[in-house]
Image (cartoon, rainbow, N blue to C red; front, side):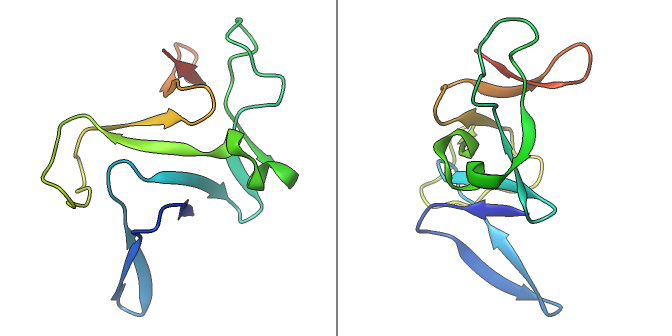
Length: 111
């Protein structure tokens, strides 16, 4: 589940379920299982072994270290929502780094 923290979240109904449209520049929080969200540990550093991204529960669900900004790789018209396969990247709000995958297929933050 993804929760958009911006003001411009639009919802439309499709077969009795709610689908959300997100726009470039929106701030998001990614939830897993309803009680954990994608975050960096409070002891995060860019040193090997410390540069990790994890699903974490508890108070982190209301902290800035679990917020991500959706950035479009190419500029779209103003107010356009993101389509499937549109190039984008996720920037971590507090570190300013991008979500990526290393050679061991682990989630890490990249410059």
